[in-house]
Image 1 (cartoon, rainbow, N blue to C red):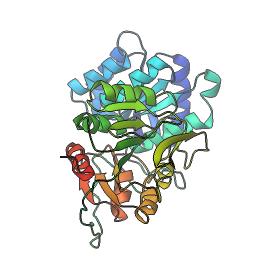
Image 2: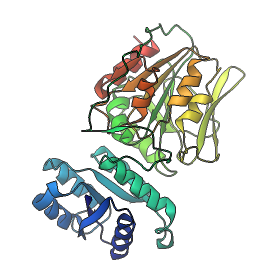
Image 3: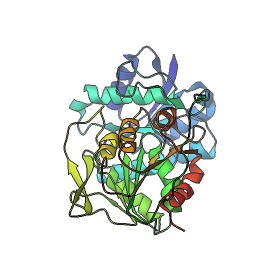
Length: 362
């Protein structure tokens, strides 16, 4: 049984979250803390006794961000799942928490009546499963094989063949990037390293709910020289502009009169995902781009694999996947590599340079 430390100043939330965790016989709330200071004390005394921490952000004495910083400073090795509210301040703080090393976040319902609903329960259990390296529930959207940091290395099939690199040419180029769990921190290691001109437009699909992707785009812009924005419906896909797919919408790239533009629609989630990378990649099938550079970073599940497979049948595509040791969760990039779709499997610190090379920028 996996032991959880629950840190939240709300007695009601502590009780409800404890009840949810205890419905799954694989987990138990071993200890609770009413603020970050009490949580830090328990971690310092019994850090190795916890398999994961569930952490609120806004608390007295020491808030969640301060506790995360202390966990890093003390080198306490425990995955932390944030429980975040959907408000502007909460979204910005959540993005910062993920950059500080939080494993994942679960969206706290906007009122207590919804806390006991299935979505919150399922998301919390799914995140705990990944954090403590348990297999996800059979039949769920994320039930494909994956690896979490520290798990046994995946052995590639001996017949896996990596296609030869092809030149970028002088035509239209698009970079299409997908990521999920661990993505915000990974993006901070990639996007700020890009030059202000990459020779094409760039679209990022990060699995996040509505209200968080604007904060993600803003945080990336603060540390980058390339221009970054949350995508809006109707945006023209311009060269040297990065668009972060808007949470809560499916993003497609459409073409008209030789120009590409972004279409955002409230389509149903696919596999529980909105935005979904497969939908974004599928929208590029048969498009007029001379080269599409697909990048797949850390994340649960297999989103991106089916879309990239279809895209490779019609377009000149170059695929870069993050390697296992540098992933928070080795799911999405693993599935792309295992399918034989990856042209390069690289550590995170080499991916920005690989993007620049693949787009043909010198």
